[in-house]
Image (cartoon, rainbow, N blue to C red; front, side, top):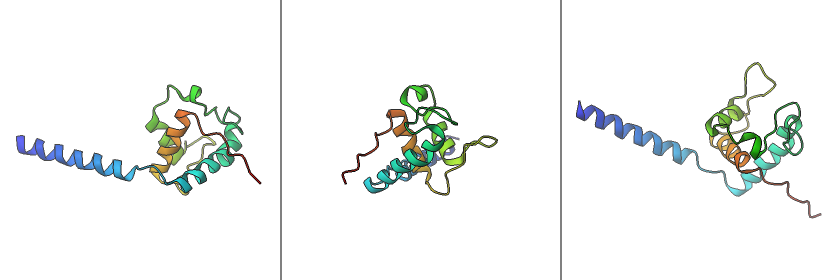
Length: 115
């Protein structure tokens, strides 16, 4: 029995470590792409400044009581029966988690075009 519990514990630990490695933040170039995508694509429903529109506000204040994993899951898999489409064709689960983390922290302001 003890050996089985130990084996299960080691397996669980390995799964958690593998998940953490898989869930690393995207590199800087991909982060810029994701920020642009959120501003343009998500902003078409959630508002230009993510303060709400067809979809709810995605501000830090509006999301304060929302579970991070649930938000990442919604971004990745959508919400069946609602206009919230899944983004899994364009994002990895780790990228959906990164976006959710950024939203929870207060999404980065759009970069100023220096042209």
